Length: 296
Image (cartoon, rainbow, N blue to C red; front, side):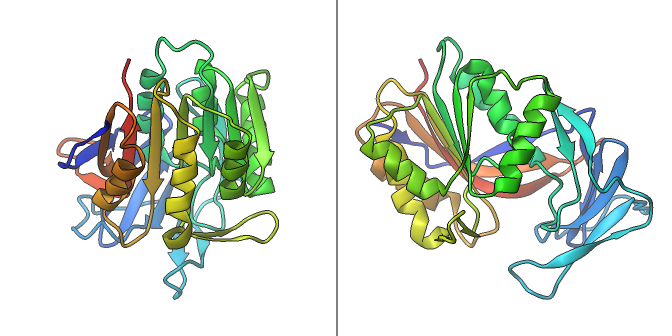
């Protein structure tokens, strides 16, 4: 029976050569993306900035709608088609998107490392990346074996393929699928499929390629239940991240504890965070997570 660790964890990421959190405060954050600096809104940065001068190439100014909207304002030229960055051996294109993101989520770096560690000693591990976005995590997983990458956005999957080519990993065993994640997982259950690991990063709200509506409050529990059916006692992990919701990581862990009660291993939960660069850098929380692992 998978044991639930009640005390939350902080899974903290550090900057690397192509990314860094330079400062945060007053509801904003200043980040380095390769040669460019950007300011983006961050409601959890409730403290005061450490730096007096926030010179940046651009800033995303949010709209009045709590659920989204806004626009970029640029003070210096920024390539509209993006510019190349790297994490470990994975290369990808960073770009100022209309959704305030820049084409990848840097707080996921420690998650990618953790998943690789879970799959150590498991040759040709079969993994599934639901809501796979632009494929940085998929390409990291592909070092361990075949990956099925699913996202409802045709544009995101196309960008993921381009990132694979940029990384010279286009020959890796990856299935790139434009599909509704929940419907795909349900079909995989009916087909009797199994995986060694699953990562899912569902949005608060979204639409599938056929116009399907996704709301995390309604869809998360049945989706995770299907994911559980795709794992067995020989599988290694499930990692679930959730952004921008009024929800506790303990609630996510409770869901996993119920669904994974018949499997060995342990369930942990907590915050994802990024540490500011420099001495005394603070931890900026970015998301909540819950994970099941079955170390071997």
